[in-house]
Length: 294
Image (cartoon, rainbow, N blue to C red; front, side, top):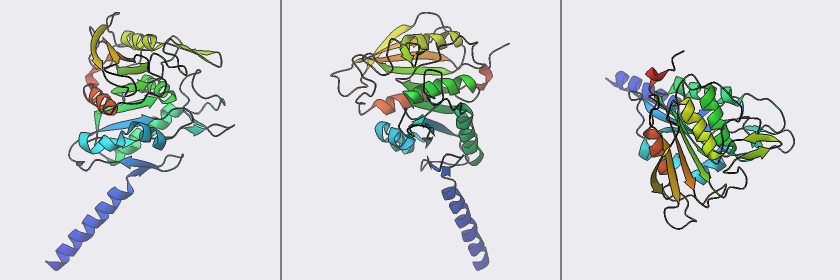
């Protein structure tokens, strides 16, 4: 009996050490902490949320701003906030999303594949629900969310872009529908709500971005106005309007715009901002049968 107990204790200790050791990911840009909720069970598939930082920031600083990791336990998702590549001139970390943002050093780094590798690495160690892999991105991270979802529409169920934008070039629709949420301040002077350009490379407006993806997802041309939300604590009342493209969409796809009226590029997030975003993501899982017909 004593021998059996010792064997069980050794096996348990080895298993626990392996789980602890696996709570980080390193695919060439340094070790990244992986938040695993206390409720995690290898018998139950769990959602995965990846947070993408803005230009010049980092995953850790982005999470400090948005507080997504703090919600992992209460919502039961795994969470990681990776870092982009340091630029050649001033070491500002960036994501190579579109010509407009933000590989200003012309490194041509393949960040989309890097993020897919992170997802697959986590899937190899944890029971991740393939229908609930989500992205949240701010600014350059928002641009990167659009690009990653476009290139890996079979993997990404939904994403939320705060102050980012989609690509400006004409492309065929991605192979699979994806749920899209664009959140943007109407007074954003960095990535303009009405669209603009960086280094002579244009990017679409907030409305053009969601309209583009509404078309990709097969939705009707006109969106419907919905509820008003409180997203910015620096603006009195429920300042944000919602425009939803959900009619006629293919299963597994929709497009939505939350406009923070008077909001800036870095809004003063309300106490419930991240909860609202996470709950929106949870309402929009991937349905694997929704692959686009050729």
